[in-house]
Image (cartoon, rainbow, N blue to C red; front, top):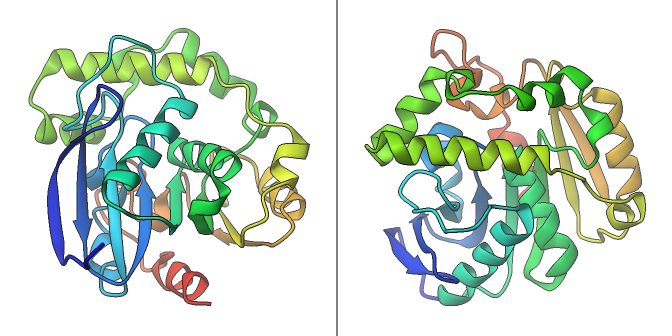
Length: 260
């Protein structure tokens, strides 16, 4: 497709009117936000730097932000299909992919099932099996209510879609998606052949041991560990203390990895 400095709108993908944005120009980089999030809440702080070097393709997944819900449960497999259809509409045949948290799970689905469209893959704060996170993390979904969602994520959602009912639907969909999480087999992870960068915070949801293990399983993978929690290095709004982004961040590392 012709390079675009900025574009936004909606494209129908499988009976879903999906919201997307394009920033910058250059080689395409598809960026997939985390659970409970929007484009802005996950990636708002790194879009300016990355868009100077790449054409960023960002979207809001089913029930998130500007994108409506379907009359069916969300899943990582369905999110992956939606993104592949979006890219087909945009005539993007191959791209780098960066997925954060749940977005990384969706990126794994794409890499496994549509490997020919993936150039380089970045899995940020992503795990491939339930054992990567403590039991308390999974137990929390059994009693989760909307009050469990960080206020900054509620504010971010309502800034994109000022509908309290839609916010509740998004939260319920994400909770069910995680309750149903089964992950992937070791053989599937080992089959990922594209250059991959695994990124973790040293106080992340998934353990450091798991990040090391996943990196060692993927044949052509590198590992980076940053100080902080779940997404601090990307500047995700829910990870920032008093809204302040620390001096360390992953922008230069991402640019270096994708430019190889």
